[in-house]
Image (tube, rainbow, N blue to C red):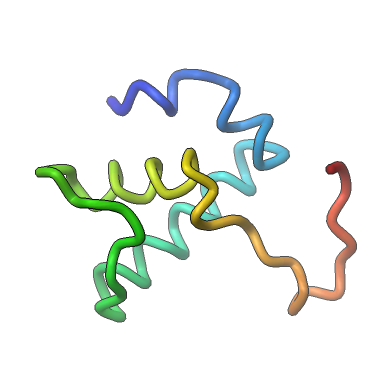
Length: 74
């Protein structure tokens, strides 16, 4: 298990487990299916570990602009 996912800080940072899961799923699709390039060095990490590191380094964040919903919080 990835240590960062055991910590609630990453969950609070994104506003909940659902948002975290949705962001991870979307980014994994971009990397695996669409062939997007990672935004951090791979350094032998799996795709999931890359996505978590991108979130921790604030390289990616949820985008609610297409939903019509207003993002709550900071």
